[in-house]
Amino acid sequence: MKCSQCNKKLCYTGKDCKKDITQKIIEEYKKEENLKIAEVSAYIEATYYMKKTRLEEIIEFCKLMEYKKIGIAFCIGLENEAKILAKILSKHFEVYSVCCKVCGIDKDVFKFKKINKGEKEAMCNPIGQAEILNEIGTDLNIIVGLCIGHDILFQKYSKAPTTTFIVKDRVLSHNTAGAIYTKYYLKKLLEGK
Figure 1: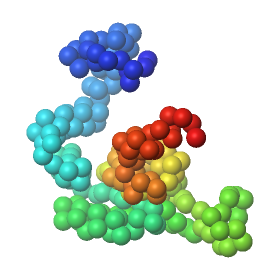
Figure 2 (figure 1 turned 45 degrees about the horizontal axis):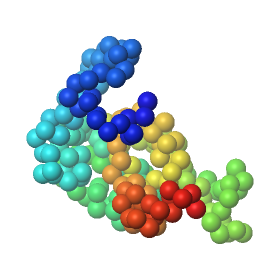
Figure 3 (figure 1 turned 90 degrees about the horizontal axis):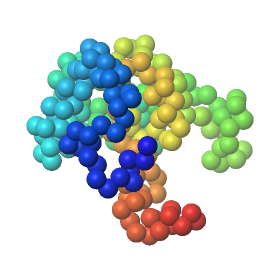
């Protein structure tokens, strides 16, 4: 499929472009956890459309899902943002946070490239972050600025559902959409330079 290239988006009004898998997908939504997540998401979208920030929506989602324990997996470079997020969320939930450098595993263990050659440098440890939050038994985990790839590994190993609050983009102040909203970056990306 190439939905991004479709100009009509008739699916919005109910057209089924994938009849061969629709019933299978409906059955997946009927599973208790999936149905509740989908229902709460639809409620938030319909009720707070253009009214609440992503952070407010996360709080509302967690309340409606009756989540008690929230995990934050954060990049050390966004520790201040993680601290503020934890403080806000702590007004409503038990909050646990795990820094990306947890366990202090040296990059030399795997011969990973370092930012500064010749210096000690701990690797990012998204598997460790996930395992620690799994051990705590969080109901939802929130990613705050994990590097590309690290976010993928974190989600792969997290037992709890995961959402992202901040996507890391060091160039665009963590505004990843800026790359396609800014004509200079867009031109560069489209020209493949």
